[in-house]
Length: 89
Image 1 (cartoon, one colour):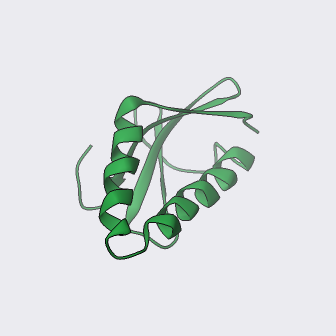
Image 2 (cartoon, helix red, strand yellow):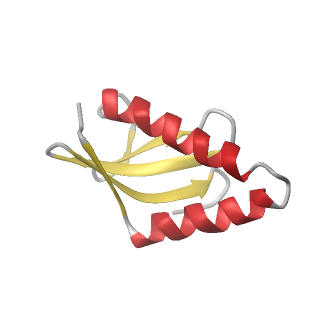
Image 3 (cartoon, helix red, strand yellow):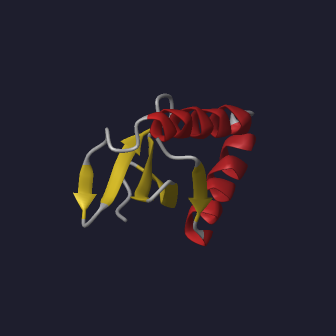
């Protein structure tokens, strides 16, 4: 079980841009809720999701077609990117 979550600058930028786009359709808060609900699951079971490259794992959001790319280091989850599932890393 991980205690802390660290967001890279790329992840922060990904989240901000996407939230702004969804704000136009009044879905920005739902997008953020989906991210944080998914991260709560990741905090409980950080190793439950597939390793895609090196030690980076990917988990899909439940309601939006985005994935969280993260790595586990000790008790820290490092979120590197939050990208659309059709986008490449």
